[in-house]
Each structure stands twice: as structure tokens, then as C-alpha cells.
Length: 118
Image (cartoon, rainbow, N blue to C red; front, side, top):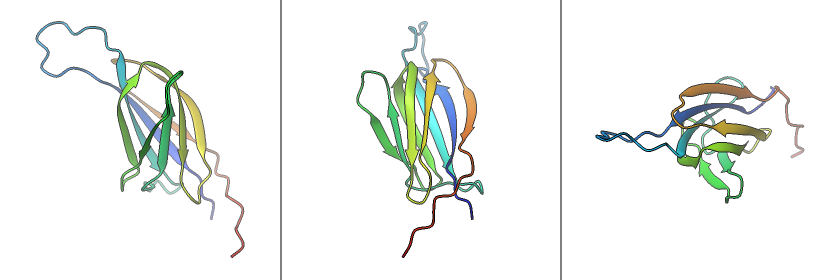
């Protein structure tokens, strides 16, 4: 069976709640990553790393549904890395924007890892 790592990334802009005055220009973005296998099932505990330029990598583990949420990232280009045992790693640059709700599906070609001898 071919096992590949699929990543669905939704960029959600952080916005202030109940703001009474005009909000200043947003300088933070939210990134939601859903890690799926080739059947569409979530991959629990997948390691998600986001590296903004000039900053330390931010690491989070996906929940039981394969969801990882990073609520306060700088606007701009970041590097996304996702890995989980038994799956090929996934790497991609992403451009985060403020006030932007967009769903982007990114997938890795269905390439199986070589069988490991027991």
C-alpha cells in the first residue's frame, strides 16, 4: 500500500474580537495545517514545524484528527515541514497574509517508503 503524507493548509488571518476602534494593520497570521494520509484520514501526532525567516522554528504536534494550529505567526514567507513515522516528509514554502482566509491543498506524490526489513 502506498503511504504518502498529504497536507492541507488553511491560512486564517488573526483578527481582534469586539474591536471598537479601527484595528491597526495586522502583523500576525494564523496557520492551520491538517495532516492526512492517502486515504484522507488524519495522522495523529504528526510533527509540524514552521520556520519564519530570521526566527526560531516553531514546532507543534498534530492532534488526534491530524490538525495543528499556529495562532500567531509573522506575515510573510515561512517554511513548512511535516513528518510522521512511516510517511515521507513534506516541505513547502508558504506565504502568510493578514486578513486572508484561504484554503490551499498541497500534496506529495504518492510515493511509498521502501519496505524495512524486520
